[in-house]
Image (tube, rainbow, N blue to C red; front, side, top):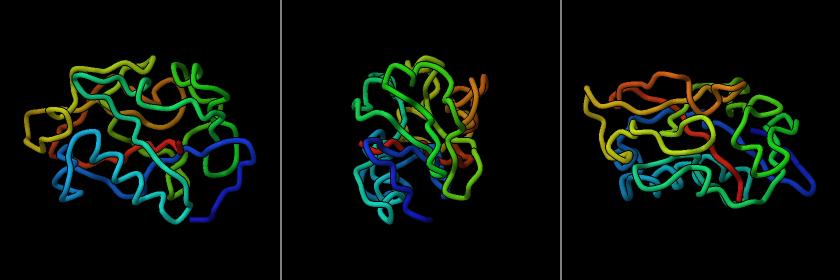
Amino acid sequence: MSRVVVPGGKRVFITSATYSGDLKGTTGAVNGLAGGDALCTAAGSAMGGEWKAWLSDSHTNAFDRIDDFSPWYNLSGKLAFPNKASLRSAPAEAILSQKGIPDSAWTGTRSGGGKSTDTCSDWTSDVNGTGGTTGIGGGSQWTELGFGDACNSTNALICFEQ
């Protein structure tokens, strides 16, 4: 992945790797929101910077987890979100994956940045029969597609530079 330079801004991307709803199973050390952050940090390590996953759990809204280090640019250098308030609506440009396309990603987050009830047991479960809210990275469904995915399936994560 090339290092996109965004003077005065930060980056946002979707991981190329995909993960089950049990983020501990993937990181081997931590689960839940911290596990998602660890995966974003690992995925963004080649670009430098600090990263946080766009994830909600039953106690925390994704919107509240992201520090206001706006604006955020996608990996092609196009403005995705001019400010933190804009995270509550559609991105101006699609959030691209490290593969260059918008992929589906775990979010646990409803449109507007608030928590959903589908968070794969706060990102600790990959049991079939439980579900997690997903988004697609572009348009009004970037954080909530309107349907979830089974926690034993795999999806990427949306990562915001902090």
